Each structure stands twice: as C-alpha cells, then as structure tokens.
Amino acid sequence: VQLVESGGGLVQAGGSLRLSCAASGSTFSTNAMGWYRQAPGKQRELVARFTNSGSSANYADSVKGRFTISRDNAKTSVYLQMNSLIPEDTAVYYCWGNLRVGVHDYNYWGQGTQVTVSS
Image (cartoon, rainbow, N blue to C red):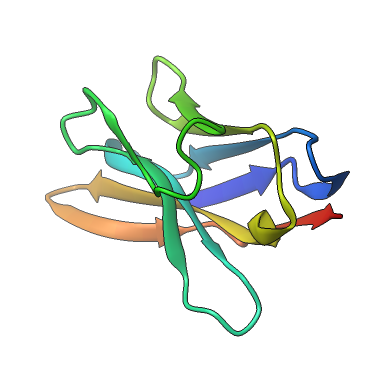
C-alpha cells in the first residue's frame, strides 16, 4: 500500500491550497487518515485527522477555522483545504493512514509535499 500526495506549492499569505492524498495498492480497509506537517527544525505535528470511527475530525488549534479535512466515500482518499494561509504554515505536509491489511493494522506515510507561504 502506498499513499501519494499532491497539491503543495508556493502561495502568498492569505491564499489557499488544496492537498490531496490517495491510498492504493494491496487490498486494505481504512481505519483512519489524516495530515501531519513538519517545519524545518521542528517535530512532525498533527494538522488534522479523522477519528477512527470516522464520525468526526480533530484539528490542531493553530489551523482550526482555516483548514478543512475531507475524504471520498470510499475512504481511500483524503483532502486538506487550507485557507487564510500564514507563513507559519510553511512545512512539508505528510499524508498518514492507519490501514488494515489482512488482519493487521499498519501506519503508512506519504512522501510529503512542500507548502511554502510567503509574507
């Protein structure tokens, strides 16, 4: 199974970007998916993710009201709409999935996509 991201880039402060992530490969089912980010010199941090039940989403306080996570009906793709971007949002954004393959659950990560917000 692999997660493939797209949609990063360079944007001015106040602008918007939409990230996409698609899971593909072996037969699997999705427990949870979401987005993390890592800025230079900092630890990777949660941005937004669906709960395991899939009924709701959790957001980092720093992005609440600006970012929205969504997914497709098949739960194999997840999206992150980022509005009102600020320079502090500059980071590599990683798609994450906790997927069930066979009888085991595994964490998978995408390759990362760079988001740069200029002031």
